[in-house]
Image (cartoon, rainbow over all chains, first blue to last red; front, side, top):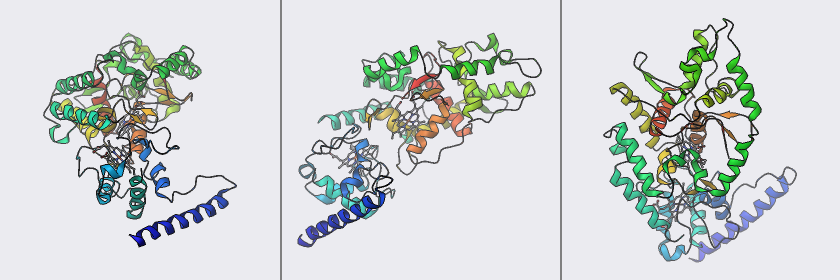
Length: 125
Length: 284
């Protein structure tokens, strides 16, 4: 648990650093920053693109969200077991073969590390 | 919002009980049943929307967008493109003949009969193919099928001659039905990296918002092409839109004019039977 937390801290520190670096490098052309954090990965339209289908009512800048999937809120109550939340993101077709939610892990839309980060982020919603 | 999951389950149950949307049941129904199933499904899902309004696509779900659409259509920004297209239509070929001469009634009220299944070539023939056939029959080279500047533009006028006609596509005989079923299979197949089918968005989730866009129901989607998007003046044909959505699925789009898309257009057009055509409209 302890190592897990410090890992997250380290990851987010590194994430923050590389973000700053990217910001500096891109200052001139003000391009979009490469997604690094779980939130950025979830928001990015070329990565998770979760907002296209899910509202995130507790996140103020989660704007113009879709209504295809249920709002992501109180996730720890709905998924006491975080591994199950991760499994849902990895392949939602296991719990519902007819779901329209893309199987992010199974179809390699996201890497395992990216799914870990998004799971951490969504778990906190 | 909290009821969304429930609402969603109900949608699925309706789909299952109607036997549509599932690859395992594809192929058993006849085209007549397929169309009726979709009509019933959408009538149940959207009791407040009269079937005639499906031609408006997502606009039928949003009064603000509909008002904006109506005011844009009063004076369309792409009007000059239609004028140029009309000139293309009216300009005689080198042999002195015209496009109008290739169609009954000078090309009025014909587009709703397309695509049709041609038993001799064993292929689906789209309206654009018929326009090209008219050119080659009169000694002119065919236009590139997906080219918005030539065939796309010509279509943007030629189809308006059928505004108001009711879609009237026929699927008669085993070979025609096979082409229809190929289109239907493509519509319901999960494809691309994201694993969507066309039906995921335009049947199951029709009416929901994908990002800020309301997903239009498949019924009525074939009636109003080409469209002009966002005030631009490039005509977008139905098949170009197929390709656009295929890219959204992260699937490799088929070539415009391919057997795959022609069959899909055949399926699409048949299920819109009975709905009024209106070409060259504005879309977001």
